[in-house]
Length: 269
Image 1 (cartoon, rainbow, N blue to C red):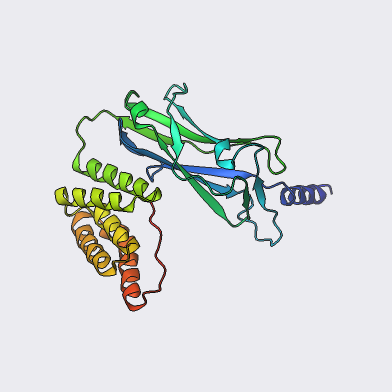
Image 2: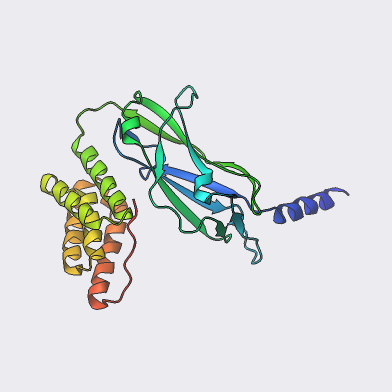
């Protein structure tokens, strides 16, 4: 006789809970990447509302308003070796959020990125490292507490000479970081240099197409997009899994030729 009231109370309590942040991270676009010692490392945090799956219309917003600092500065990256010992590895924000406080509707999410110090990374011993994002807020008019992401596992490898795939991956990441900072022309130079060495690099061709699109040269962008599609069909053992983003890029470019006012998609890592 007491089961229904208890279940009702639990459901009511869950619905009325103060929203909290939930964190998810990736490293170089993956959950468990392999990285050469001293190579560039990009950590991307996606911050989500705990009530994002709630279908109700009146779910309260998540508010992060640390006193005296921006919400992104309330996040720290924690690095541990395979024995659980914390390791120093400096990091810096790629782009600082415009607003110091965050107000997040329950269906929305926000992303922020850091680069890890390449010089400090060069001194790490090869092996597996856990990277976690830790958000701590106190004495705030909004949410207060600690939220920790599921760790990403990064395998640091000892390799003085990068393989061709590693060269391409590292160059593309550096170009993306340059774009994030507004240095588009430098990113173009980097991709052109890579394509001289690896003319069939799918990732380089795709990013070069997106750079040309960003510059407004749709014909050049379409040329690179078609080259990327041709290279993907020859490179991937299962091309169907890797072609979707390229087909969408090509179709978008064809659409922009027909409609010059069509929007440009953002470049993702």
